[in-house]
Image (cartoon, rainbow over all chains, first blue to last red; front, side, top):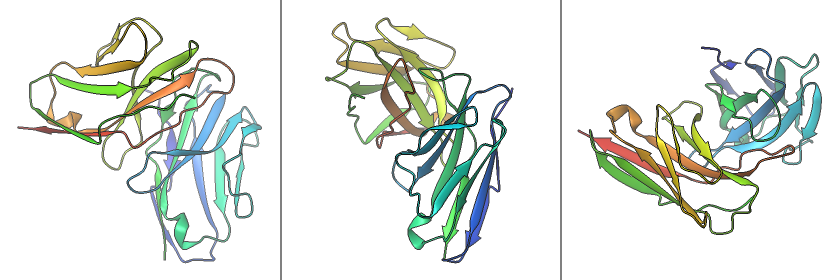
Length: 114
Length: 111
């Protein structure tokens, strides 16, 4: 069964450092999502791509976060500089199309900022 | 998207049916009801979704009331592996619609 891949699974960094997370969606899925999940809360959407284009980044803290999906396949989410409050699980999901299509989630990257 | 209300936690004995309620009294006609679950330290997993009719798949059944203001997710024979946080989400069925997660219901299945 096809899965969404994410790496690394765990990342520990010091504040003010740069971190990057990678996501490889299910093959053929046009839509890719990045979510952030703080402990005890539900996931919160950061950015949504349709192919290589950003269609929603309204909740992305653009002063320190950036996301790209250059060829419309895999994607990278970057934080620079990391802050203590960025400690969270970062989840990637993909769906075949936009709209009500089912989203399939990866295992996530657990980020700890010291 | 309409807001949903779920109990924060529920218990269920292994082998019994787990019935998880969700209230979505402000749901619109073009909004679907989705259920996802998240086992500890894993990504959310899709369970089922529906618009008006009841739905069943290999994982669960979804019962939506006639006025669509509430729904129930049924796990017919709960196992220990069903212990997870269950999220009920209402989502528009067109455009760049995404998922807005609440805090969900923590279901604990005990032996």
